[in-house]
Length: 53
Image 1: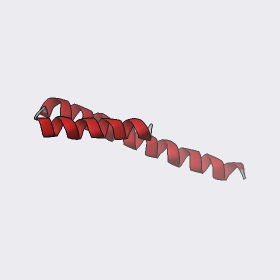
Image 2: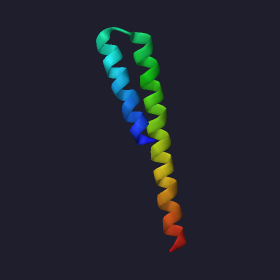
Image 3: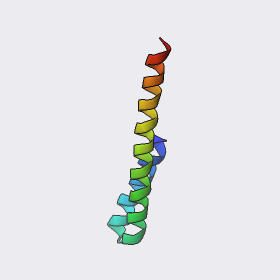
Image 4: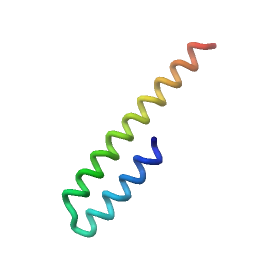
């Protein structure tokens, strides 16, 4: 998941440099959402791992 967030971030940066503002904004938003989903899944995994002990 974090891999895809980084891919969309790179796409957003390249699109922004080339002047594609709409595409850059959309890719940036997707990267932002994927990043937070990855963080939430990490926290849930850590909590569940602690509860199993």
